[in-house]
Image (cartoon, rainbow, N blue to C red; front, side):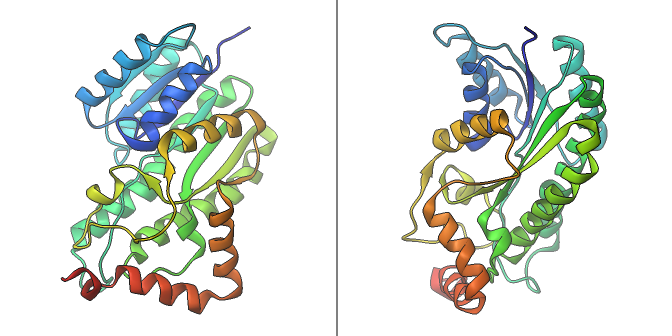
Amino acid sequence: MTTPVVFITGASSGIGWQTALAFARAGYHVCGLARRQDRLEALGAEIANMPGAHGEFLAVAGDVREADAVKDAVRQTVDKFGRLDVLVANAGIGHSGAVVEADWEDMRTVTETNINGVLHSIRACVPAMRDADGGHILIVSSIVAAVHTPYTATYAASKAFVSSLAGSLRLELEDDDIDVTDLLVGRTLTDFNVNRLGPIKRGASGLPTMEADQVAETIVQAARGRPRRVVFRLFDRLVLLGGILVPGIMARLAKRQYQPEDCGI
């Protein structure tokens, strides 16, 4: 049987790194796209040294904000492995700070990465999936897509965009036998908070967290089952329900966590 091939953006750390490992263990060939070549090489070495049978890894350094860079990475993937079956649009960056006072370049980086990067990835991968007679797109969104979050509004809005995109895109691509899954990820233990742009570096305190490898294993399961939507934990489901039933209360709870004065800024 033909070995399936997955293309993962933001593969150099966190969820992307663990997802690459999980797919390789599951027997997929993996292309990892990220800006940090050294980290991709380290990921490739870890996959190569896995015990037992596993997929191969292709490292491609590039920025999802650049459409041509993503297209070139997809071309390299197809050249090496002969096909492309799965996209995990994972690359993203966080942001905190008031919309009016936030640094504009930070806000632009967030929207160009979290929105444009997903669009570039989809537009580059779909033609290759059509050539393979079908495929699957998994978009890494967040539970904040459905909750009003003062002082992280730019990030939350970017995730609301891609979640909405997932629902519409699934219908657009159904005749091509390309499924789309919206992955609503909750708080995960990664470097995300450290790397987020804006003045507030810590995340919301006191909330339950997942390990990145747990998220990765669920993503691999979703690639097999092709659901429309994945919510990872009961806690995350409760947050989403709160955003529907009591949006004002949820927004005020979020404001207490993120407003600058609570962080000594």
